[in-house]
Length: 600
Image (cartoon, rainbow, N blue to C red):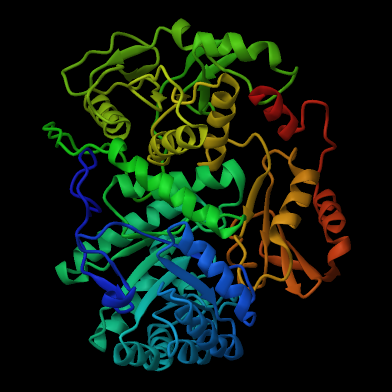
């Protein structure tokens, strides 16, 4: 199976065009030869017309091209008429998307008023109760027939009214039927989406896009690659556009890194016609990150094919870390094999940060680049690796980072070299500083993409010239890629009109209490829609159950219900204690303070 023409050379996947609204009157085209479309979602209550209108205008002002609004029930869906009417009265023509979960009746109302409908095959006319059962082929087909009967009226109305559709599958919210046959897997996500696509195609409706979202960049990347490979197998007329996004990415640097890894790596492989960066922040910030991320891609891709004839040495559809030999770096620190991916610094950077490192701190340099005897080669030539040691691509090689290191490991596999690999965020060290937010995105795309391919045993960041920021960025990239944990991992939804509490404030309060819990994953979800399913592999969950009330989860199991919001963070800490995951913070365990010391 192939998901792109070449892993060494950028070639934009060509798709059919999907129109969202009247193109002559403010609508947009997704796919074809058109630029990537930027979109975001409102956090306002859909029944609050004025708030939705004002937030939409704020988004459009910073470049948002499509705005999504939740429609959790028929009453909210009906109010979309008022929102759209007021936007048009004020001269705003941006296409509106209704976000539908569970209720076909809400979709049938919303489609009358908006330009696009998003449905999740995991819970639209399907069951999500975490029930385990075996389906015979006959029972499975009966369920498919029932879903077709529920979904077809929406398809036909979209076709009649000229609407677009997004078939949006989410990791962790697959139906029980899909889970029991395929598991909570990329294959299950793809097959769930294809079921709905076949119903659309059966009715000669093709104005739709796919999405495969996950809060885990590795899972997200594998899902999209598998989807495109399956579409390629199904035939050239299955060339539907792709909507990219890392869902529940969180906030701040962590949210930006996760999004850059997942979205950026796929854009660099030529996939993706529209993107949404999901941050637990004010919505306009999402568009600013979209703009910055898209601006980096032309510099991060290779548009000239590498005439190497070397097949990729890794499986692009399933994460497996490349096997390598261990080597010594400094003192008791080893690299390669089963060791964690290490964070290396230049000698100049090490000299700046080492006096500020607190005793016992997890964030510390683990090697000095100039002192490690790194074997550096041009992967385009017939190189020889003489003996053990870290191998890397030479500075100045006229290739972008991602194809250069992919070519390096593929040629090393041909030669049966097992040396560990040192990844660099840039092969052209910069002399003048770039904005930290840009250095972050570029490093996250380059290093994160390769790490999610299973490539790399150590990383070196030189695009960020601030020594302390460079060091913390390296560790944060490894954490976001799911390759190393030095602090708590948070899965936080970006908020929407369904949210039952202030996500930004609550996320900050939970982080203040739990940020020192290494290896613990906490999900913070605004409502039950993004509750147990979307949390996927979180250890603990804090989920809005009703206005002012919180439900707490252990994994996907609800254990405490309707807790007053004023008590919920304390009860969450108590639950973590009860399950043996709590440790009291020590002097070196305050990650926020440690990062502040390094980056000040």
